[in-house]
Picture 1 (cartoon, chains in turn blue, yellow):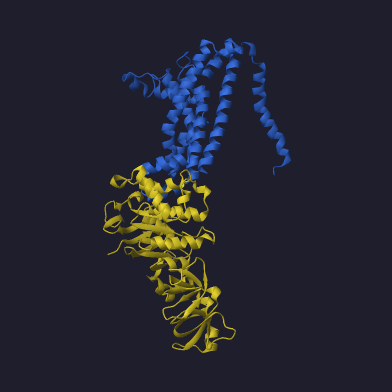
Picture 2 (cartoon, chains in turn purple, yellow):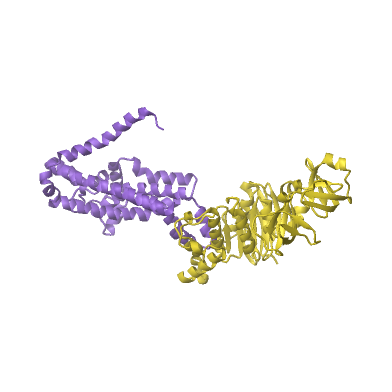
Length: 260
Length: 354
């Protein structure tokens, strides 16, 4: 039972989210909606967003799962320090993240000159978009998977080891399947964060149509020139987000069913 | 020659034990909760790192005494399967895949193909009477059924040593006797270390018992000896139990001398089958003459020893031990060598297959 007076602030909270979304849906220029969201610039931006977000999510998985495993299965001051470091992008403003990336990989950055010798120019390329998105989205995946790993505990892994399974086999056949629900929701959260990335991207990757101008950047630009297009494109992003939330719920339920 | 010998210390749990297990033998580590039993098993399995040495046949599994960086064999390479209190079946695998997990996961030349592992699994599921459940998920099984599958899964790895941790503690009273009987069958010729706080499990499953108190072994020896003639006060209080072996005869045990001990059976025992009767010393009373309105069991016996244990005196006879008060000993004027009549209610005599 919850105290009745909680309902008032709870309702206000829900309205704070609902009113702007509904307002956007009400004010969108439905008559020209199709034309607005299918202009060359818009489709370029949407496709670039989907492509980069997909690659970044894959990178988050490749780097984030091992990180989560290390964090979940160790303890001590070093672990705490590593966790704080990995989660840092969650708490710093994305634009600061973008500046930091620029100082590392930019042409005059710490690693930039080395990379330039190798013929790699990262800043203001699609690669930079992917790096920026991975930088800000990976903590979401690490948090979800580490939580799932800690909840699952080591009891099944220990039994698997005494049954003769090597650590690699245990990880593949026991550890990962057991955290699949957490892994799925972490993946979807990370993908959504990649899709919405703005601050780090515009700072580190710039805004070149077809190369680095993702959907959020396109929306921001359109707001100056054609506010109707900005609203229409925003609604597209909302639709994608709603789809993702629905997907998370469905996946999570069916996966929990299989492992609980 | 010993199958397993351990001389180990786990400092942060204050455990320090030394013991050996012979091939095919079951050793029970008997002790109260918190005595360090599970720590010993974890150290043997390689899940915690003990100081000292652990040897399996001619292999050194862990050794911190050989200088340099020591020897350490990881858990998956020890040939020891762990059977835990909860079945710990992998929730995302079917019952059959759980049992096939070990044969499928072994490294090197002993690794089994998918089909071979499947055949192994079927064979072991049949052994524990779970053939019909192969396609189920673990959570669709009862606690007793899960423990059966866990036993099959452990045995399917053909372990050199089986480590069993309180296998019946998490089961309800109905399924515990069945699982105990199953364990008795499968442990018969296997090298096993059984950890338990249940005297009954130790009495029925173990060839030898080591009594563990506060991280140290306070008594160890052949099962009947440890139970009937405990060498430590702790062992006497904790592990005191009469264990009489014989053959089943209806609802009674026929002792080697031909006399009957009436009792209750939890699982059916065929007439003439090997059986054991378990009686707590506190359930046995001592008389100078056969009591009137007598219980089912009145048996003549001769006092061998009178041992004070805390508030009671354990009267050891050539048949059963009885715990009675010091006042009763004085009143009856009991001394060593006296002929007495023991009585025990049939409901206090528990008959088990042995």
